[in-house]
Length: 222
Image (cartoon, rainbow, N blue to C red; front, side):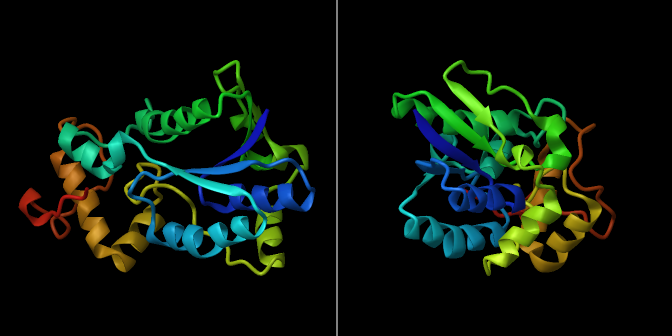
């Protein structure tokens, strides 16, 4: 049996790791599925805080990649699509499949720790594989998001930003505004995907006349 955290780089999964370590629960691996397009703050937190922390605890940190290391942005651009909030193919193809592919190399049954807090217990579900059992430590300990933030801060770590690719269709208006202000080049790349999308009924950002961008203005990401 292998005990593994499916790590997203956000508040809940970070707090869950700290809780597991504090409680001396078994933990063999922490696996991070890199879309190639996470928020810059997520990469900074993972590389400068989480990786050193796990190394100090002798816990193996593994990064898995989709599409032979092509980024999600490149995949979307080539297919002329954007991430779909209904079908959620990006979660399946970019997160779940690469993680499960790694699990199979271990040739073992898996206990997969999932970073979902108590307020989101409705998101609990089976893994869909009879050799992978999902476990929800935050829910077991009735830890909500504020509890997670307090735990992270109590250990002297900064609170990570919400995880997800920078062009996630679940981005709030505030999230888009922050991206536009702090990372205008990434905001433009999101606009390029929306303009390039063959399904015009689907949108990422509601473009205005001021914001519109032609495909020739974008820079493809690998």
